[in-house]
Length: 361
Image 1 (tube, rainbow, N blue to C red):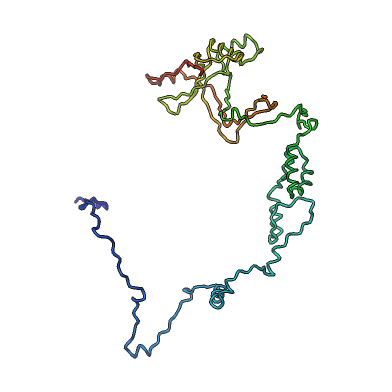
Image 2 (cartoon, rainbow, N blue to C red):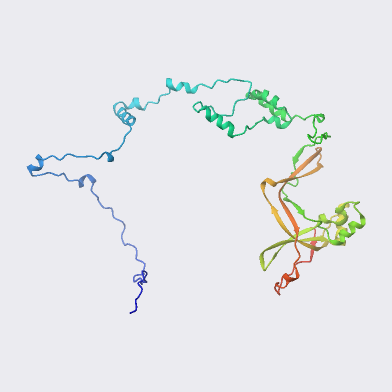
């Protein structure tokens, strides 16, 4: 005898699948009688029910607690409404002690940063002192080469407007060069140069590029060794005019890297001539050759920001102009693919650019 298994799910066909038409008339308002009209008074016609009284027993668990002060306030509102709602501006005698300022034991010291909570126990103060370390807070003048003790004595002068103006003027006072020296090397300062933002190049975005080895090619490295360390390396191998071009592997979206291009001999000669003269390379094509591939890592953390400072004179005297460097890129030489790994390459492998043609506009 075969036993059939009972299933709890089933399939049914919906018979009516047509959308219902809208109601051909608007909504109607029904006259609903008041709730009090629904209550019917019970009138007994039997004399036995009138003579027999049933007492009402209440369980204490079903009682409702009430606040006596609220009841007194409600009763006062009913008896004397104007007096209960009148705003009292006077302070009660028992509350006036809360307005007194704490007694200062030593007025020469700076005010304590701890809150005045007299209702705390002394043990809690001691426990707080043992758990936390004391944070020393100096005035703003201490950061501008002013003595901390002097700033403490002048702390009370900031209560007036004249004292505040004098304190601000003191921060712009030029320090004495004879009193400025490095705390470790004891090197003395020679001159003071103002540090201002570079408004000419402020809209440009700069990043720090760092290579893990010499980015010049083999031919330029051999030329550098032959010429020795004398001379400017940037004028010798022209690595400061290189171009990094990003490229992605079409077969592997995660394989992203950079190709480092350097100018050839003729392009390097033209770029070197442009630095020594004011002639611009307009409508002239320069050829850049691919040197090697680099993998890169971007560091855009806000706590690792740097500044690019340039020294120049724009007519208002020598000044140091700074630009923010919000990112840093570390380029590492890409590891060459071995012979075993090349066996698994696709036949239609993608082509990488070996030359770049650059035209200055």
